[in-house]
Length: 171
Picture 1 (cartoon, rainbow, N blue to C red):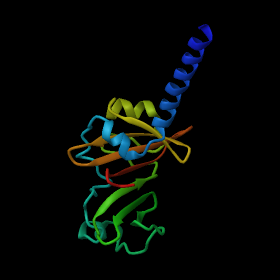
Picture 2 (picture 1 turned 90 degrees about the horizontal axis):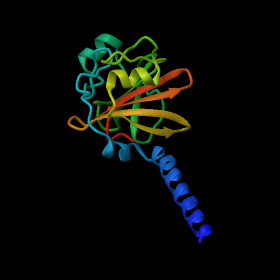
Picture 3 (picture 1 turned 30 degrees about the horizontal axis):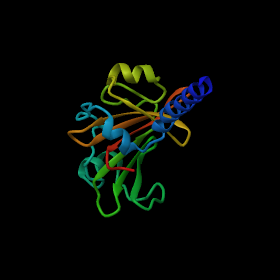
Picture 4 (picture 1 turned 45 degrees about the horizontal axis):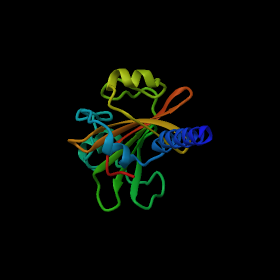
């Protein structure tokens, strides 16, 4: 009888610990479903917003004509606005649907920048975040369910490596 109880406890512990590990590895969309909403409506990168057009006068006057792809991707077109700021559009559209920022001097709307620690992110964005792993990197993210936006902070030992601000539909 004791052996059965001990075996049951061990199995339950293994299942419980495994679920915590695998939960961190679920896709973005899984986490977006269960995370509470955070208002990200004012987020922008140097005055450029999601859904702004890559060839708009606002962008061309600030960065010049953007036409060269920064890298090859099957689903999206990626471009550098400048060093430290990369954007993505859908293949057949010119509206920005993702920002990737690794400029150490550029702050989010709430004041977070590359190099900041996880504690500061939570202090400024709040407790409604999710945690996940991708490519061996710890990520915490926030979702704005009203606008379908998300912001994810990729965190290494020295703090934030880069952050992504995009539509929740992005893969």
